[in-house]
Image (cartoon, rainbow, N blue to C red; front, side, top):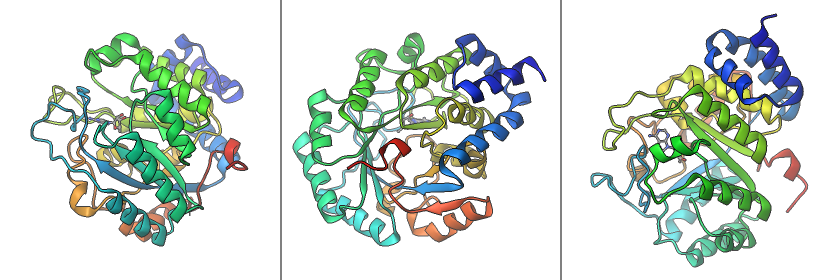
Length: 352
Ligand code: 5AD
């Protein structure tokens, strides 16, 4: 067996590689993917079988105070269409989602100061009292420990906050000066410490990213041990400074999903919308690489096109919750089993 395949084996057996080792396999990913996916799908099955957990995604605000250079809803994008969902509109999304069978609601939005902690906590409490059998996941950015604790005490179960890149210099090229990787990482460790099922993650093929940077992302995941990891290709948005940059590839994104499955065998790993956007079978291929979560869109249909993080985002096909039965068929045809339960991380299944 080639030396590089032996490194994949080592990751399979020990869930750890050195930085140089990660860099070497990432650099040669094309010749290693098939072998990686044979092991990563085995690990995924040992942890969660053929189950694919479905989450209802509610994109509740397209307003954001941040100015991340890659993101279509960045503050400086004067052409972005801004909207905010009221508490009633959010609850209405949950009501529709609950009827469709969803038992996890993911509230995602820009960092929008309109939603004070009081408002967020009120929304969480209302959802949890109406639907006590459901998990609530927040994806609302960087906050203080006090705020995170309040959300947790109000009943939120999970929190997604991609670290975006674990390399300081790379982080600085993707973000404005007022944002820092150290604060981002602190937020993630705080979230874990409070007791959230915590999600980190990064984009593949973001501008200026090197193989070494991706190796650093893997090492950071090993260190943080998040319960969830969101990985999708970078896709340019024309109204951003990176509008003319190239997209990341589906192939390298799939490879990073496979590595992540080996590094964190029990991780909840979504097949992301971004991957489905750049490749017609992106999400099916992601399942084969080790992913086990899909997050269909529960946002009101007249708002979906406005939550535009990148160009050509898919928002009206099988990823919409209303087309759930067709999504389920796709999952079953790929050899997997769509599951509507809360789908907690294995370490959390007996809690709360
Ligand atoms: N391409 C791909 N993903 C993006 N995100 C933001 N902008 C883009 C883009 N242009 C991702 C970020 C963020 C998540 C909500 O969406 O990783 O954390």
